[in-house]
Image (tube, rainbow over all chains, first blue to last red; front, side, top):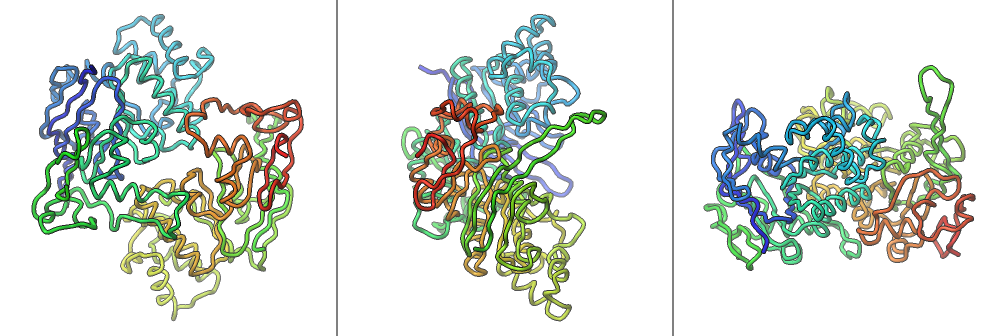
Length: 320
Length: 294
């Protein structure tokens, strides 16, 4: 049996601006087992990044987790306690960010930056840290490792920088890797290479991965589970094959129809009309109702709860 | 023919350090041939560094080719070829109001005067599905999709014949990408536009293009009608690009004097290492650049 690694219940995060309050994450419920890959999809401004940053409280200064219960490896994480967080952040839960080239420090070599993680989190000596760094670089296919150890970020291409960053985040043997659009600035072939690398690492290191993306074709080949976010909420969640083959929420259906298909006879693509609502000024009831083609009266009054489609799939919609 | 490229090559010279005279040569493009018909779409497919953007810049005349000829089927290139850049966040001047951004090309090409400019702008905004009140706002106030619409409006304002689209949807969300692609198709019919559509997104190219050109390291490895390339890819690289995703592990970028794809190719032979293959027509409207396909 697979064990549950991460459980998020009722997570709410708000961002406080001078004149308005943005509900970036609302009632997020997620569950992740060991060695599982979860993809979170949604358009930009749907709160994907903020809800994942909430897990290790890496939020910007004006954002705050209002409520929520996060259970990691059976223990409840107190997000407001910096000392307990320090033991988890970086060593148990680690992040890979979108733009590796700007995330890496340009005045240190790749090797020095990975060593630093090991010395800080795993309390290794300098020599042991270097050995471990070299073996990690090999693991992400930056070979010969000794050669890349002394490279500065600007000497490497985007894909190699992304590999270096993945090396940095897996160096301390985390349990959970959260990758925030790790491939969106890379081209197709590099993207597939990076995703294959992540998949290999899942098997060799027993990692669980949460992948944030807005590219649905990634999900098909990569994810076990998928969660679709809209306006700070999860609107549909389930096994990736089931959700992609049999989407239930109108937003998921719309997103899948937006992908250009090769053998289509139709001249125009189907689109979702309108645009993502302002998170500070959301509509009443179901947040998707102004754009939904199947809108009913009840959708405008009351927000739906999750309804089960099957054992592994549920969606927030009155149509079910 | 609206546009014909004959044996186009472009080399960049890079000085190795400030003090030395050592110069290394980068072949951004070598021996590219293609022609573009009226109201058709050429999709240019390739990964980063394959010379896609260089090709776009050459056609607009932003850079000059080192070798070869570009032949336009109309007298004024400046007016008839326009470009839309990848990133709408950096291609619009942040200190100009949208109205001025759209007026500028019309005045430069003397296509409007003070009396009819407002009427022209109105119809332009309607065609690109923008609101009327956006004329007095700055680009910073718009979302990515809307900015790309503004860039499109600017490009089509002088009614060009060819539009170069350099990854116009790469920075956009899926639903917005679909809206913009639909807009491209609408405009194509309305203005009888032709596009050179540069992208690394295979789904987008398969949807919008009539003909496809596949670039690898600056060489055109395969070109032809979309239907032929997508149903029957011949070159090993195109096969990898269009094929199953998990087969791509082995691609490495090593330079080679012969065929550029030599190091990654499954069908390589001795000839491939030393001699660069030339383009051959294997069936009607389908050209491949490979020694092993006859």
